[in-house]
Amino acid sequence: MAEPTFRAPKGTRDILPPDSGRLRALIGEFARIAELSGFGEVVSPMFEDIGVFLRLGETTDVVTKEMFDFLDKGDPPQHFALRPELTASICRAYAEHRPVPPWKIWYEGPQFRYEQPQAGRYRQFTQVGVEVLGADDPQVDIDVIALGWEFYAALGLRQVELVINSMGDASSRPAYIDTLTAYLRDHRDELSAQSQVTLDRNPLRVLDSKRAEDQVVIDAAPSMVDHLNEECGEHFAVVRAGLDSLGIPYSMSPRLVRGFDYYTKTVFEFVGEALGGAQNAVGGGGRYDGLVEDLGGPATPGIGFALGVDRILLACDAEGVFAAPPPSVGVFVVDVTGGSHALDVCQRLRAGGVGADRAYGGRSMKAQMKVADRSGAPYAAIIGEDEVAAGEVTLRDLRGDSGQRRIALDDLVSDVRSLIQN
RNA sequence: GUGGGCGUAGCUCAGUUGGUUAGAGCGCCUGGUUGUGGUCCAGGAGGUCGGGGGUUCGAAUCCCCUCGUUCACCCCA
Image (cartoon, rainbow, N blue to C red):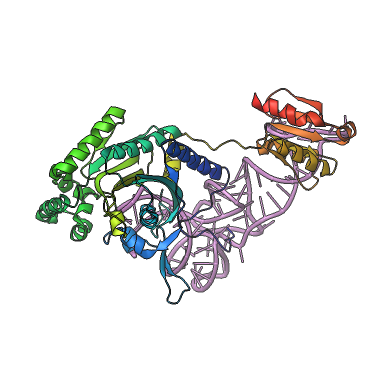
């Protein structure tokens, strides 16, 4: 094919109608549900001082090799990075503005990671999410998880499964990691070469391996939930009881460790069972009780989740739900007198709150009717010499079988409004 | 970063063991007498066969390189 001179950068894409309308509708639905629960929106910068993200963990791939970073034109230049996720930005904002806790916020927007694109993974991707800062009550964990669960249901998704685990805290995790590391070292020879490397770098992450040869060792590995201290164990028990009482089904997985180092206590993931590819996590999150402090703020507990919009839409495709919204044009104006009358009629309709569109270029009636049909508009308003002379338009039903009739131009808006209402 | 698949009209794809001006469907445009779409019919526009090099009398078809894309690993939404 004739290669275009420019194309969207690797891992990015143009979202065109009607998909763009669907994306917006999904975000709108999330906003509705989040605000119904008392969350307010935070719009934060698309890039931050790279230090904000370095706190995510020295062993996370997102930090070590997936950052889009750049120097600005200052003297000396400042080192920035496009945000690879939003939790860190939100914590930075909390430390900066010190809002009254608990701070319940939601967000949406693009994020950037420099990785190899594949099914359900892009270099620029969109997430919606919530964070609650300043509350360590396990009731918050339940509320947050339930909010995510409710959102998927609201979209019509049925094949979403919730997986939960507890990562412990600073007083219980180190001992567990020692136990786990000792176990994995004993079985080092049975692990894949890649997992052996992972073992030296971040033993927890070995539990996450999808490689078949690792499964036997992983299945028999000691699990974090068996090594929780009293406080973490109690916290986790309350969370589970809360999910049970809300009737939200879940499974516990000792292998769910998540990708960022900041997680403590509750972690969870929403898995889209309808997705065929390897990227089947449609959302995930957890508690991060030390992150705000790491970013220079006061010691502040926090919990939140991020849901992958691109993957959610793939899941909606797979399940055949959440179709694109219908076009908002109610009347397509066909003017065969030259086009200037369509100008006036469109303005009347729009001023009356009715979506209106028209053809350009003085095309034939047949051609204009074709465009009218394609537009998805339920009605066409036809203007010819006869109508102009009579101060009327011909209103034609494009979707039903009620035919067409001449009506006074002055009645057009009110007539169409009552027709569209029904 | 590593490995596999694929790159022919806007889209989905055919192109026989390499052989004359590269095809189909859909979409698009124009017609099918008086002002009418969604069905049907007839025309039409649109491609340097991703790019570069090589083999050959001759390459979309074979070889090499490159770019893009896609799937998977790593990791994540």
